[in-house]
Length: 251
Image (cartoon, rainbow, N blue to C red):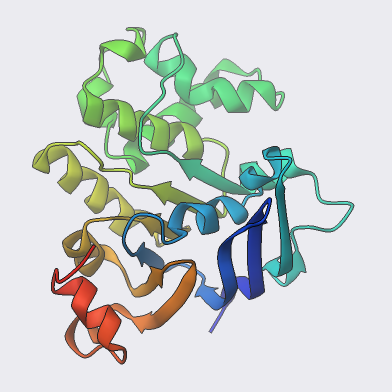
């Protein structure tokens, strides 16, 4: 099995508060991992560790190790900006840039030095197709991105991340507040994208985790309670707390 990310004995602190406690898990390449658990369980903190977004908090410190393709992401020669290109993040609230749909998608490639118009057009089309948005915006690429619906804006943000050719896509509640049709399109996109990317999604929707994830991790109060094949987690969990959360007894 090809392991894309390996997390070893990870504990995270914000000042004197411990947010994650000795987390160990391996994320296989080209699979979808869903992270579930009640609010305050450390799901988003864990996600933000994987591309070092927690670094911006001066009170954060950690112990343990996170490996990407077998190499620590916390070595002195690791460029956090380059890491965040390789491990892209989709946030719960879509934040399109105040420019056209096309310019949103090619913003990153332009910054990286790509200036050829034909190449940028190819990147935009490919990324929008992968995000299941191309058919809806093909004839309106010059329109402001802010005119798109919420679900379309979220898929645009996915396309903008894909344009940078990441290896891993992190999604923090990407369907929060979206209607069922938009949610379905994002889930369909995820199922296609895992052929080329490794995806880790934080979701409070256990049914969504059951639908899309190959593996599921259940977090509770900063601890990893159970991790394994999604079908097994949802049908025959090993820990009573996992079963209670999935069945809605708490959360």
